[in-house]
Length: 426
Image 1: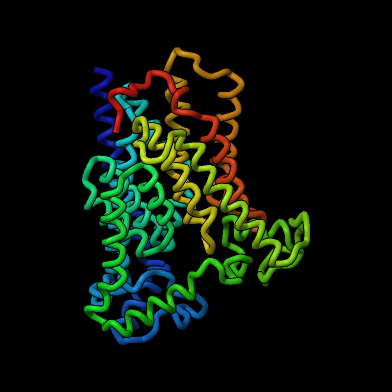
Image 2 (image 1 turned 120 degrees about the horizontal axis):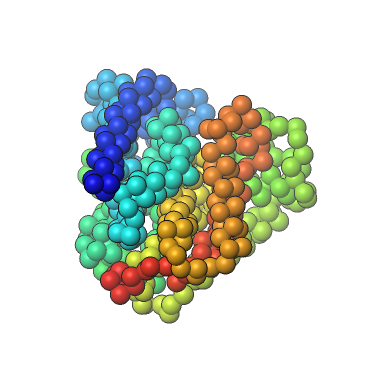
């Protein structure tokens, strides 16, 4: 009777959430957003205008692929509000589909209906601000993250070509999920890797069928010139004070003056280095974080992950790296923290519902305290927005993402009680 009650309540909450989501996007579609830039670039593309050579909305570049601009062209024929509404509605679908893909890795059969509901809500609460801002800005993150996570899910369930198609499309639109290709190689998903690379080559040159080979090659050349991580503006990535990630945090900490006219006149640097030294430090830290992924893999190369939970933890770390190591990342890109936050919520939830003491009380307190801090660093802008300029100035979102690394490092899958390794093998 109790289980039935919570099943009904869960169903009611799903439809309520869907209804509120629809109301939310009906309102958000009335506001200006970055999606207007994407549509404007789509129109310019078909008029053979170099979409990477100028600015949109006065001072913003179009940073995504020619293929994505071409794919959006049908939406340029309809009313702008309706086009934005369609895009936001699709983003709702992407969020639900993403949760389904991530749920594949987590055994929730030991949760009651109430606990499942609580786990889902708490997981999303950790990235609530990023989720809202992706809708508000009409951004691409939810789509890219859906393609990447769903692609990995399909690969691990044996649908290599479809997973490769999804993952390659995500990389084509924006390079962020590129970190997953070496993972496929390490974990011996060679067929999926081959499909991904093959589709990636196809997506790069497919627009040539419509816009011509010469113009497509010109666009690819200009696109790379714009997004090349070695560009000076991507090393000292402070042109907009709302940027986060290592390429924004390190200059803020290690330079006295940065190229940001809107920076607050509050000291935040602990040194005053030149750009060349910062680039060296930045690349060393990036390399260390990438190599640290081996700590999570824990097995020799060319062997599959021991079980779903082990795979989820290592994939969560790779997704967490994305907004940290790539330049030019706004706050909404930190939605890529979602899998790592979900893993930590699952880890702690399993310890709270179990009577087994597989970790010390002190360790549990450290993990809970750390997650509470991360919840605040992720959502302070939403909870106490009147101080937003200070959160941005001190790059607290980046600190939260960095704090998550040691937490998932010490929260090992082997410590989770009531696991079912044999039935969870991939």
